[in-house]
Image (cartoon, rainbow, N blue to C red; front, side):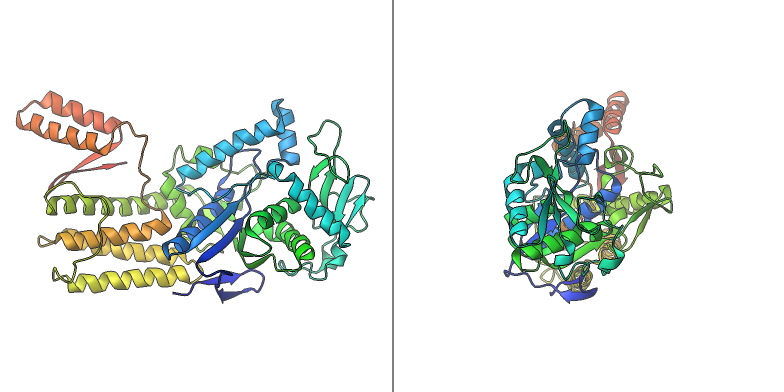
Length: 480
């Protein structure tokens, strides 16, 4: 099935064709690692994780690069506040980033390059721009000459004459034009710095992504992504400097996700309403955060509130309970523990022709929505269509093992893309086998009327957030 993508640069949906069949080169701008990531940062990381998963699910190899900006004015200020060094600040918050994205079920990128590990490549890039006449030195700084790049503004659709005060760089007498942006910043006393042909200093913000993307993915990316706020100036400047240097398109497809509002207000530092993922996952189920992000189309703005996150928690709970019920009923149907893996084979042979047709239709609808510019809200609707079908089927006395397995397999297959089921707790105090054994022991204690031991086991399971539920097929358990 052909995937279509809304391409920011063309402002229309286009059929996706990677440069090399079966391989996707995707670069997404990563965090400036001076603090914990907030939910605004998390939205692109969650969404592009789903994009990557969907390509992989369809048999593609994905080279997925997410950079770390580990030298920047913000890191310098944070290091001063903490009375430490810029690298130590970066190390701390890179570790926190990995912890936070793991908690959200986000798979690690193929590569997470750090700016400070690529200073030679950045210097070479800047030298090339100077040699081609696109950049100039001025009192230790180096600036990109925007007037030399005729297509400047083509991504964000802004006119160069209207951008005089829109670029987030210092405006000073050292620049030929107010629109020019910095590639290399001359070092100030006491700042972290590197030697270069232009003098001691450090890279500007925009040049780092161009240099690292080219280093790992080549002159032209298949997909370049990030938040809507990066269209201008960051991505616009990337386009100018990369295409001036290589003479080739920086990316064939540009994707940008919408903003997040907090209680109907735009999230901003001035309002002090930012919410860090580090704190949010302590009170909200991580898969509910994923659901909240994916329940709206990625290009649409979304509003975070107690109500919307509560709705998300209820929704993922419904999916999780369905999966747990399928596993429990299937284990009963086959007379033992549910084996690893499995497939949807055998439905027709088992006489489940109607169920087979329904599951095929649900799966086709799921793919139709995901392939249409990654329409995750409608794809989630397909998941709930399956949940409804599964709940009805589980209640049947004649439910077959083949039917139960087919339902569970399709649910897990769609979830490999969306990641809405609870993460397996590999570091949990109680392993699944331990829980099963305790349930058996509790059942035997009750039969022996050893109520004290039965209650003790139930209290232990409750303490470990294990919920026991009586069903016609016996006791079922699930993690909260």
